[in-house]
Image 1 (tube, rainbow, N blue to C red):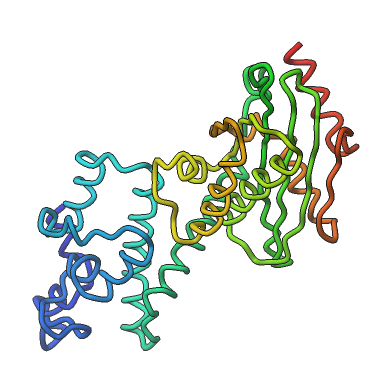
Image 2 (cartoon, helix red, strand yellow):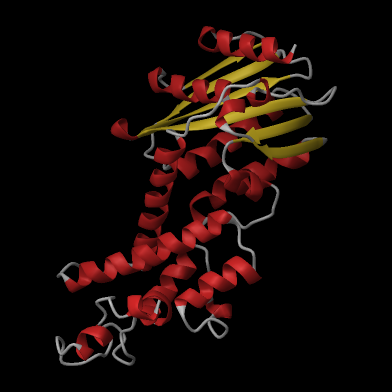
Length: 304
């Protein structure tokens, strides 16, 4: 690892090779420009960490080096995978912008860089998530809720070329019968995580408007589910959507949230994709849209 540190083209390393006349950071002008200084200690880096929602100020004394933070977060604090992923992407974003500045481009403000990091991460997750295959099995189908409860499945879709998005929601009762469905186009260039949070918000509102008071909400986004369960603080990009969803929960008698794979969420996924061809919001109450009839039938067949 020590050898790898010397390959980073920081001013500290370049000075040792007699390439630069000094080793001082050009941003703050006070400290050597080492890898850890660029990623971790320099004030622009601190602003970015705070902006993305990973305010690491309290652990800097325990983690003087960036790799110490990786170890501390993973082993001592047991951060969620989503936070580890965001941490790595944030470091990459800070370093990338540092290199852009070195080549004559302007430094991005912390808020702009944080938004770029979150959008890049969301696009990466969506691209990889959408290509993950799954093995069809009876265990990979929609599951019945307990008697007298309802289940609302939701999903989001990003239509990047048209700078639009779509959400789909399906509500079923404990017999597996479709109670209501929703498909809605959103005329906004939302990222993957943002549209999943919006899908949750639409599902909670739609279910409440249907007069349902005991419901399980299922989403493919573990981040959104954990935020609704208050296990994590939501990323800033979806904080308002999560707050909106949470504000509606007192109108229910009992709710639950769970994370499901795509294989158990195929109907909601299809409804989200159908939104591409819609002009706005479409709902179906006590009827099943033709686009999902076969998928619903397959679930009932596997579960019967």
